[in-house]
Picture 1 (tube, rainbow, N blue to C red):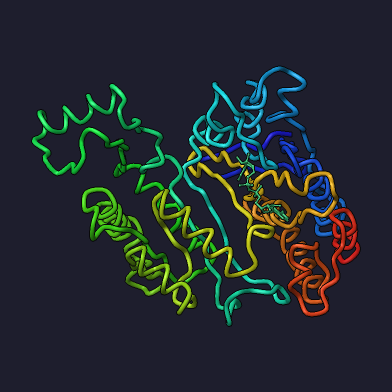
Picture 2: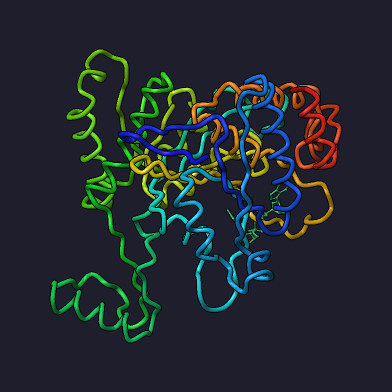
Length: 392
Ligand code: NAD
């Protein structure tokens, strides 16, 4: 049965159809484990009354081998139709055509929020002294900024034209080496900023979190990053004035370089982070490293207006370890936990979270984490999945 929306609220049947992309490289090892773990948790949490109907859709190498296309229209249609899906990592095809399959999925469905929760699991080794103080959720704007892909190579006709327009049309004389400069454009709109910051505030309120911090470089880039901050404060005042005045929510801001330092020194000061695309890229990886890194960092790309969401393993296809049954499936499993939370099946997600914590505390993990744990015991991917289901 399809998940639908009613007045921007998801309506989830007891047996929702969830499309999934297995993924390239290690995808065929982590995705089946994720499905088994989610099935077990849902069964346990709802005593067999709810069940996900998984629908495999093709993308990446598997799609190319079977259909001659990297991202078949049928896959885009399935995510369009069923609203909520999940994916393993995808390789970026070399050569012409689609630049990145991930970007194509995000753009087609206008998934404007890249959401990355970062929290610590007891038992995991971390490079910082108090990783347990890190409990944040990053809302990274996913469609604008210098990542919009509007750029021209140095020496190209387009770069020359662009420079001429800057110089002759706008009177810009600050380009230091015009002949050898490449150019990139950084679009930041009020609509784009507002919808991202609104989503971050609504998330904070619905999860009883204390603050939203707008992270920006508005001190330097006044009309883009500075406007992002300004529009954020204005939106908060206009749409969430009561919550601000009652003290239920605090809105603050921080310049990005200071934030990267503060997040190491005083992570307890931060909860939900709203930021633009490039800052968000750096910030989410830095925070993930504080709590154990790439193998356990989950993520999602969401459009809160239409309900469309694709949850995903945030790491790549890990070609160096593919086929060895040693990859850590926790990133995609935790992304599935986010998905369960998103569709209102948080009880099942909680069970998975607790089971992971229990295993990590006992030093039970895949090799990437176990090697840094006191008395760590490295299990294969499939063994780790089975242990998780046993604990559930
Ligand atoms: P990568 O994440 O694939 O690998 C980086 C390192 O981390 C490797 O040593 C790998 O073995 C290790 N690693 C990654 N995930 C792990 C896990 N779950 N458990 C244990 N170890 C893990 O990054 P890369 O090498 O830069 O990229 C390889 C390919 O993946 C490229 O084609 C890239 O385009 C693609 N990629 C896809 C996504 C995505 O689909 N979301 C994200 C990043 C990279």
